[in-house]
Amino acid sequence: MNDYDTIAAISTPVGTGGISIVRLSGEKAFEITEKVFSRPNGKPFSEAGANTLSYGHIIDTEGSIVDEVLVGKMLAPHTYTTEDTAEINCHGGLFAARSVLALLLKNGARVAEPGEFTKRAFLGGRIDLSQAEAVEDIITSKTELFTKIAAGQIAGALKNAVNAITDKILILLSDLEVTIQYPEYDIEEVTVGRLRDSLEEIRDDIEALGATYRKGEISREGLRTVIAGKPNVGKSMLLNRILDEDKAIVTDIPGTTRDVVDELVNLSGVPVKLMDTAGIRESSETVEAIGIDRSVAAIKKADLVLWTVDVSSPLEQEDIRLRTEISGRPFIAVLNKCDLGINKETLDYFRNDECIVCSAKTGENMEKVTGVIADFAMDSPGDITSAALIVNARHKALIDKAADAIGHAISSLDEGMPEDLIEIDINDCRDYLGEITGETAREDVIDDIFSRFCLGK
Ligand SMILES: Nc1nc2c(ncn2[C@@H]2O[C@H](COP(=O)(O)OP(=O)(O)OP(=O)(O)O)[C@@H](O)[C@H]2O)c(=O)[nH]1
Ligand SMILES: [Mg+2]
Image (cartoon, rainbow, N blue to C red; front, side):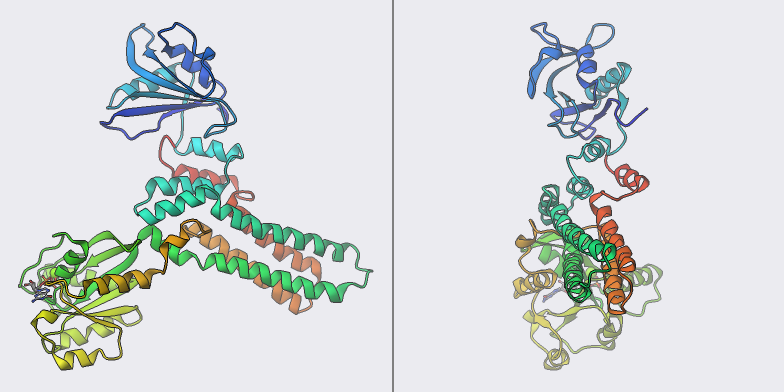
């Protein structure tokens, strides 16, 4: 078994649907297809033109029809994998595609590993590793914004940004090489000054890229927004109002919500993971106490807390204690139930905090609540869809290491270290960036990335 044998897999989800696609890629893709595919005009598949769809039937070893199909023929190197590729469009459902796949395997194909088609696109040089990872991102995307970003990454947004930095590093390294090779020339003064400028420029570029991670993460997972507060202040009603759906149970009994209820919602283009939690109070009741522990845990991990209180009544100790739980997390005070009146002391308590007076029941000021959440997450989400963005933890870790390496080079330069030592740091930086694009990534790292892909991709 080598990397370049002919592989086959069902590329569409298993189950009922209009069509299922079985994909074949490799040197023998057309030869194997020809053995199982019969066209009404009697012509062999080898005579079908490049980039065409041919109608016909898949025939099993006994000569019976397995399915009526359309077969796409795509010639290397202009294919997804860069290899010869055949795509058999069968009827959807559980069995047609499986029978076709089984027949292809019997005729010499090997079943593809998860991500193997995309891995071949990478090994064939059509895409870099960041583009390959974006393919899986778009498949597993849970938000509209992240889908757009992943499409931009597939088109090369991150690859181009990383390569632009790498190009600067290469120029710097060749300058440095001159100094190391010809130390007898008295060019040190000029070189050190220029070297420092270039190093700083590269560090700024890397750090600017690293700073995009917050938006990248929010676009992928949604801003973790936790609705917290004492029981009965209207947290669940607030969730339902923002979602415009009866998702959480609302009653006038304090302690109604027992578990964290969450939902991804799109607020002005920003994905937000909104979480309703159990009201926090002293409770000896087992189930409620577990729920309260979960509320506290959710607050600790929140990007933003909506600290909800009933603004129509005086605050209680149970309200005020929340400040300790929330401490350290960004929060907005949601002063709910304003339709029942406004208690002056309650309002006054929040005079130094960002707060919104509203009513989940009547909908008053709800657009302010959603607006503040979206603004907190990011401004102009539309602008980031084609930008170079760090969206995964692997890339972020490498960007941080690259920034550290270049920072180390700068301090070594300031300390008057020899150029060849500085060169080592700069080369490290380049290697870390190369791991993002795959240029310098180790084989086991590459294998690991593709093994997490879906089957058939
Ligand atoms: N008048 C008025 N009533 C509200 C408002 N928001 C919620 N309520 C009422 O307050 C009561 C409690 O609402 P919930 O949304 O269940 O409160 P909660 O904070 O989720 O309560 P727990 O789950 O017990 O912690 C219900 O009777 C709601 O109808 C509001 O803005 N105005
Ligand atoms: Mg509730």
